[in-house]
Image 1 (tube, helix red, strand yellow):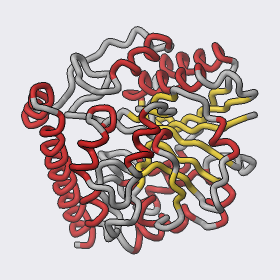
Image 2 (cartoon, helix red, strand yellow):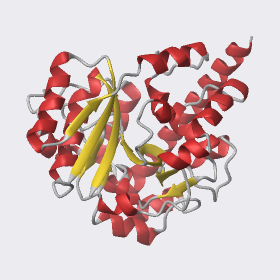
Image 3 (cartoon, one colour):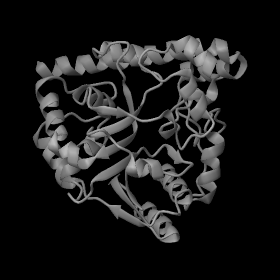
Image 4 (tube, helix red, strand yellow):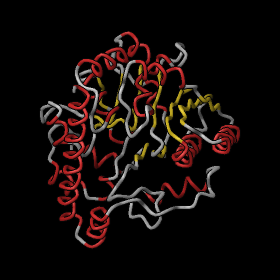
Length: 338
């Protein structure tokens, strides 16, 4: 049994990606072959050596993919950057980067931990869909702004299972380029929004255990559904079931912090620390978060308010952030047209 994995990150995220890769290898030693492809941006020699050492330790292949030619093409197409970088959208152009012999590919964000076996994803029927993803736990209001109905799914791009043959056949990358050039280039969540909008109706839903998100660890299932509702998401039973056995944890920002921040209150902190200690980056020193005043207040409220009360403040803060991001992306679109 074999599996191909893709990571994409810059030098800042190298210790976190190294931790994620360690967790992947630790829990899938039974695989005959695991190849990890890395789309790196500005990686230092030290980080690359540590990543290679991780592969050697477990007898796995670490393959660094040159992205310079693709970035040059994206510049020629006048594709927008995100926070000054083309990195966010690189994985949407996989056919131009990876060998055509790769049929199935699992993309993992650097801020993930693989805490179980990935066997099911190797033989999972994707029902002729080019991609399979887990639904996003927070973006109920945002998907309405994008034109989705309440009942339609909106997916989180932290974990993506690609059927590369189908992706090529449906010309998904070409459709994304056409959308960027002719419809809309700027989105609050560039790669995630583009995938959801362009591949609308062509993404298969994975069980929540393959991208288990922080909100389900921080709050009770009952509190979550009371606050966010059930439209377009999983059932109470599905979340309760997978909360007992997550396979992939996705620890995106929570109350302004990540597990790698000093004195964080992130619900994934313990599991991150456990695999960091096993990784080649175990000398990593946590630093304070860059959270502003509002997020520091949010952290304080999370510490002292009952979870069933705080979750409503959490939702309001998140939706305000998305509102501002949508407003800013719309301004960029207008400026581009002028």
